[in-house]
Image (cartoon, rainbow, N blue to C red; front, side, top):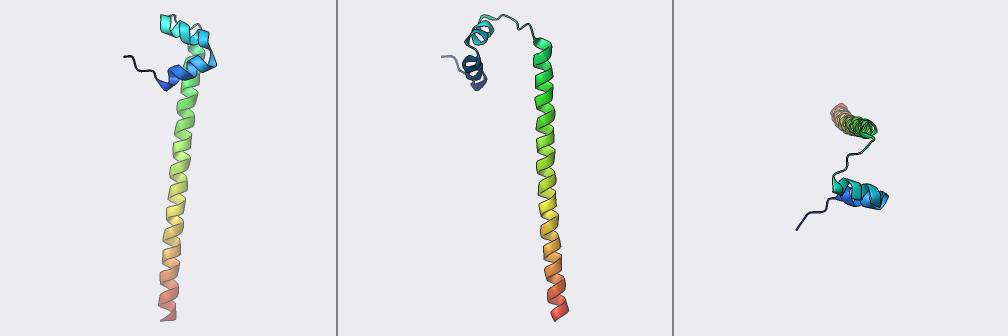
Length: 78
């Protein structure tokens, strides 16, 4: 039994003829556009990952600052 991948379902839903061509082994005529799109998606993925890590670092630094402020205020009251 052959496994059907999500990308194959997406191709079929977008264009049944494109799915059929791919299943028949016919090469796409727009390989350069497909490669450019893949490159763009990879770059976007790296940007999303970097922004998520930056946000997490910012939240961690905020937490550290709040802890230090709390320690300072508690020590100044004693």
